[in-house]
Image 1 (cartoon, rainbow, N blue to C red):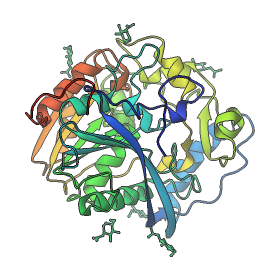
Image 2 (cartoon, rainbow, N blue to C red):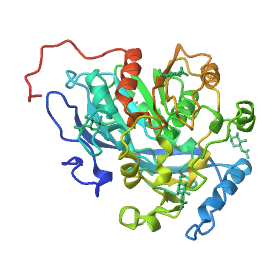
Image 3 (cartoon, rainbow, N blue to C red):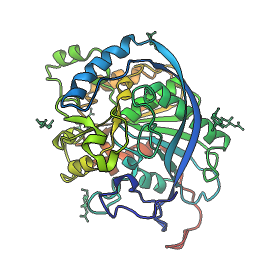
Image 4 (cartoon, rainbow, N blue to C red):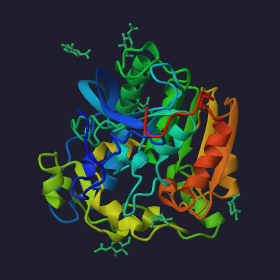
Length: 396
Ligand SMILES: *[C@@H]1O[C@H](CO)[C@@H](O)[C@H](O)[C@H]1NC(C)=O
Ligand SMILES: *[C@@H]1O[C@H](CO)[C@@H](O)[C@H](O)[C@H]1NC(C)=O
Ligand SMILES: *[C@@H]1O[C@H](CO)[C@@H](O)[C@H](O)[C@H]1NC(C)=O
Ligand SMILES: *[C@@H]1O[C@H](CO)[C@@H](O)[C@H](O)[C@H]1NC(C)=O
Ligand SMILES: *[C@@H]1O[C@H](CO)[C@@H](O)[C@H](O)[C@H]1NC(C)=O
Ligand SMILES: *[C@@H]1O[C@H](CO)[C@@H](O)[C@H](O)[C@H]1NC(C)=O
């Protein structure tokens, strides 16, 4: 199904996209769906308690993290649909082009990569627009348990291992041309993440090192938050640990907190009622209307996301690695120590680059420096736009 309108109303955030913008300078995009049968190994944690009462989620999350360490592994199967927004590169028509598959962070959706126009219709923040200008097709995916993709059991079916299997099925289909009649077999593949999406990408390229050529990790929680040595890191740097999401988020089941948006979702799909808590992704220079718009358009996140730490070293991957981190990212701590350790985690990568998002917090795409950050990333990738005759404006 093709969404036929854009950004006209904040009341319809889930449908918000630039789907039908067809002009000389804008990508033509459409919604696509993929359905796969997935088998994966998951931690078989017991069902959660009633999560509807105040503070129930805040008290349960640390218990869950603990339980995950000892829960037995079991095999689980399911048939799942992934929704995506495919934006075709210019000048490629039906021919192949390089393709980037985009994986959003926790409590966002595929709109993260194309939310061009909060407030004022600027496209400065759209990764998909920028990639198009550089000759790359993009496929922004609602990760399993998000957006228009399947919402199975939020604890058992939304663990990292299952998400990795859905992406493996997708990349296999993209490479053999069976993913969608609209998507030609790509000439090269990059897997791009933000935050929990970057945790997905890094763990994915370790599990399936031959599926993609390039891993791009934005807002990757590479520092203490992903590190068992956090306490030591903080004391050696004389730092106070930052307020991370579990501190005062006023969590509630999405279906209870925002019934108009999340009616029917199981209790383990969680949202936050605290609008100021949403500021955690912003620091430095950004449009101060964004955090509240961000809050209004938040998605739920599933309990199973407590498994999103995975391994911390990725020796299997031999492709190219680009890490783009806001210099003020409180989830990543982009100091030189952390960057040096990050490089060491990809010992076999053909190249490793770090991009400094200036005056940017965790959400590198939503800061004033976003365009500049994209320029740095795509300079490392190379321009793939064909030098074919100029298009007549307004035609495609
Ligand atoms: C998934 O499995 C079901 C039941 O075994 C089968 O009917 C269906 O065709 C499978 N779907 C895909 C996409 O492989
Ligand atoms: C489950 O599998 C993971 C990954 O292989 C492993 O690290 C973990 O120790 C296993 N858990 C148990 C309880 O065996
Ligand atoms: C193409 O890839 C899909 C998903 O990985 C796989 O299920 C299917 O068997 C493959 N088809 C062919 C013709 O190789
Ligand atoms: C909301 O979050 C902010 C920022 O994390 C925090 O200072 C405030 O106390 C929270 N409010 C509630 C009602 O929890
Ligand atoms: C739109 O917002 C961006 C980002 O905050 C800002 O830089 C730009 O000046 C704004 N444009 C207009 C026309 O208001
Ligand atoms: C990131 O860029 C800023 C501004 O150019 C600079 O002050 C800072 O030192 C840089 N950070 C790192 C870790 O290189």
